[in-house]
Length: 558
Image (cartoon, rainbow, N blue to C red; front, side):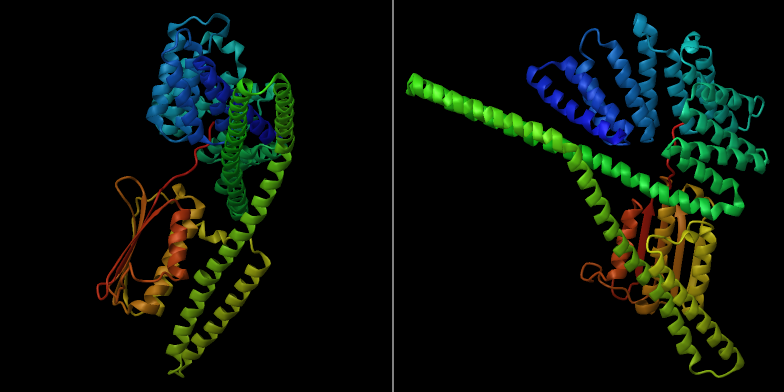
């Protein structure tokens, strides 16, 4: 229902935009851009929201008596920049908004100074400058107008408590969180109440009270599901995966599935807005074209035919206008049905494509790689009949049973990625490197830098990096004839994660080499991780594969 409302609102704003452009009414046009920006912000289309907010700002900044609208544009622009991680821009916008509130008297429409102070403090909090954020939240709590805005009061208390928690200043914790929770619960401020409960869980986890931490995280999850609040469910699952060690894998798997689902919904929303804009432009262009054609015909016949011919033409003209009105009415009536059909088709098609690609990658990267390793082991054991060789053959048979079980799991549960790659990532990588040392006599040098914060790396990227490393080692074993292999995980100067895989083997001509499924999978997985891949190789000079991927985690607005 909410998506349909956003789609309808966006459609009407597009039509209003075209009309105000024709009328050259910049004030009303700026209001339309502002409203489009708000709709896009609400569905997570931050890039589109930023563009429309900028259009609104440049139209308004030279218009007289537009300070209140400028304040609204600066506020939404600051919130958008905050979501995009552009914190300096966000601070600039919010501080300009605060200056407008201080220097103007809007009377009954006077914005609350506390809102500006909370926005500035929230930006500093997201930036990690907690001392500054505490200063602004405390200033906000001193605003006399807070009595008229209890939700803002609850937000200020919660944000203040969270900033103090991050600085490990426990002097008035958890009392500040309980103040925020009491206000939110009494007035049914759902999102504020849920995030406050999650922050209480973080607090008790920090001070060494795991039972309370688990309890509050479960309360947050229950309330989020009850209120159908997806963002709250997502953050609650993440918190439970951190504090409930016994059930961590279960919560992690649920978190990954929900996160993927929400990303798909956000992407579909952005695609829908683009489609709505395109369809609206086509209808308006058809209307403009028809009107222009009709005016030319009318002007021609006025001068050339008699009154009777003119009356006949006018009758035909009215018929065409009625036809156009009927087409427009039909278009509006079909919009909701059309969106539902397209959405369902996209989901089905996307599911089929993703499942086919996932099965292909899992079979090639996982099962075939392990079978290749077993084949190498068995080749080496064919020439031996000692007791140790017999035990190793038995071990190989057990491994074949495990591969059989993995194939059975792939056929029975097609939509599941193995979440074990998400947890204990370094240990899993080390296990892979140990197996490599057993099957290939080449000297293996592995370096995993200790300054990497693996918790910042999202789960999809962990899975992709593991598969890339696995595929690269298999290619070295099959084709390289290398004597030395080097694997390195490190951070570059920009804070990105870099994976380098180097060998001194036979190499190949990168430009002439036809890409097999393995190399294509490496490129695809790099792009899925928003990363950059560089392959350097030449015959007789070895190969170097370098993957650069962002170390990041999604910021959840408090």
